[in-house]
Image 1: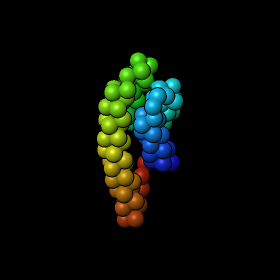
Image 2: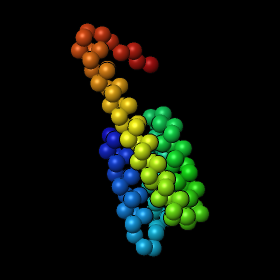
Image 3: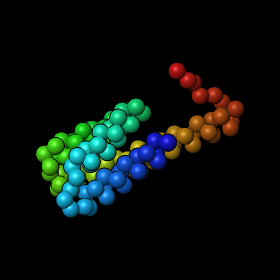
Image 4: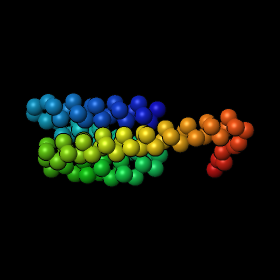
Length: 103
């Protein structure tokens, strides 16, 4: 669910940045939502980029927003790859008869 939401929010921010005039309020709303989602799964780097993104939205700085969007895409890609790797490891451990501790 996090992956789907992330991709939708990133795409929505990109679409908003393509429109003239730029709707910084809408972009900020997406960044705020994504920041909350990333906090809930412990994705600190994504959260930090979202916080910077929101600051650029507040300043109505389109170039800063574009840079943040690029950085957000990169951080999300790294996060997704790492999480998918961990999920595969969990499946392999379970398939081999092991167990995963839960808290």
